[in-house]
Length: 301
Image (cartoon, rainbow, N blue to C red; front, side, top):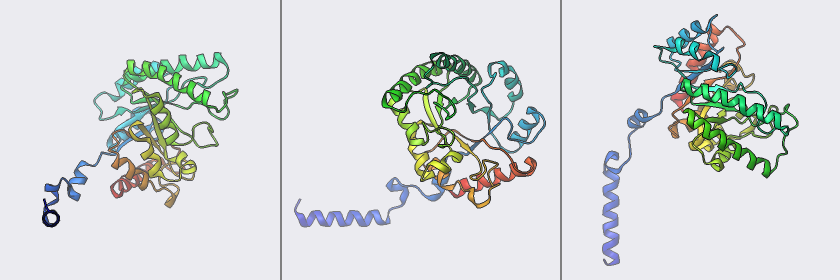
């Protein structure tokens, strides 16, 4: 084709594209985008909802469209029947399991490491029976000493041990979930991207990570960038007010989650956003207000 004919054909093609409907060009309208946006799946920890008993709190959750329940890991195996009975017939599933193990994986003391391995495996097995998305773990809190030094050898050891736990988690039908914390709680692992890189190096379907808006407040320059950096490994999200770690909305204008929600929507994040927080006011008022707030911000994202 001569140069003149090529340019003419290119211009005609560009003009056709300019007037063609977006649907014919592989794009989508705003309405179609909204139809494909992921659902905001809200989860509560055991003490979040108002109510004197767990049954009353689950009733509140169901009435207010909360579809996930995040219990603690302490004595989880002994509570399987209780949870099964209370959740039977409800539109609520167990989301993640919040820790509950003893010891820690990066202890210099072999007995403490063995205690960690034994107790987290008990929780992983129970989590699998409950259909949980995973068991949340932290490599080492600041107060847990003596701890392995922050070196490449320690990181390699962590990846190796996580792969072993991941094998067991997959056998049980669940995962282990690394949680980054702020530097006041755990210096070793502080950002979602760091946790995701450990998951990448482990390269194991049973090893995943999470983000927590409270910890991200102190450690992440961008909520959007933090959650986006979790990528395919992001398995769970915690939410709380940004100034006092209470119910979202109780810290006023500081409680803005729109950028983080935008990342979750763009990623088609399929898992839960779970309340991990206290409450300064009356739960009967603060919790419904928090649900309204984050649902409005999800729509804005």
